[in-house]
Image (cartoon, rainbow, N blue to C red):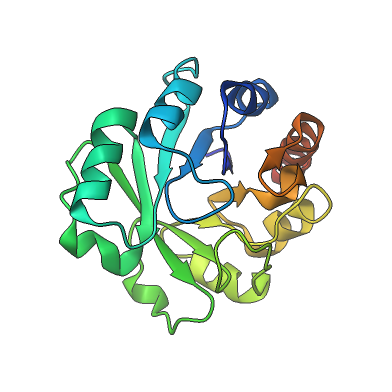
Amino acid sequence: MSLVIKICGLRSAADVSAAVTAGADAIGFVFAKSVRRVSPAEAAAAAAGAPADVLRVAVMKHPSAAEWQAVREAFRPDVLQTDAEDYAALDVPAGIRRWPVYRESQAIDAAAMPGEYLYEGAQSGAGETVDWQRAAVLARTGRMVLAGGLNPANVDTAVRVANPWGVDVSSGVESAPGIKDPGRIQEFIGAARAAERKQ
C-alpha cells in the first residue's frame, strides 16, 4: 500500500491545485483556532476542483456539535480529524472516516490504537517533531499518519525510521505562516515518495 500524503492547512483553490498537482492523497482544512483557519464555505470553495479520489479532511479541535454540523454540511469532508476524546460528543456519519489525534505528550497504549489515527507533537501546527523511534512502535498497529515538524529535508528519514501509513505536513511547506509554497509542497511529496521506494 502506498504512503498516504496529506498537505494540511490549505486556504485557497491555488493551494489545493498545488497539492493535487504535486500528488497529494489528502488535503486538510483547519477549522480550529489557527493562522490557517478557514470557514466551511471557504474550504468548500477551495476544494471544489479537487479530484474525487483526494481525501478532504476537516481538521478540528474540541468542536461543538454545532461547529461540526456546519463543517459537515457546508464542506462535506471525507475525514474528520480531531482529538480522540472529541468523537464521543459528535455525530459522525458512517460514511466519514475518523482520524483521531494522539499527541506524543499523552500516555498511549499501542495495543488499543484505532484503525486509522494521527500522531503528532504536543501542539498542532507548531512544527514540533516527535520521537520517530517511539512512533515506529505505535505504527506497527493500525494506520498511523505521522505529523509534527515534517518538511522536505527530514521526511525521508521520518518515513524510513517510523514506517508510517501516512505523513502530514503544514508549516513545513510554507514560505511564511499560513502561506503555502508550491515548490516546497512538490519537494516534500517527492522526498516522501523517494523514501517510500527505499522501504
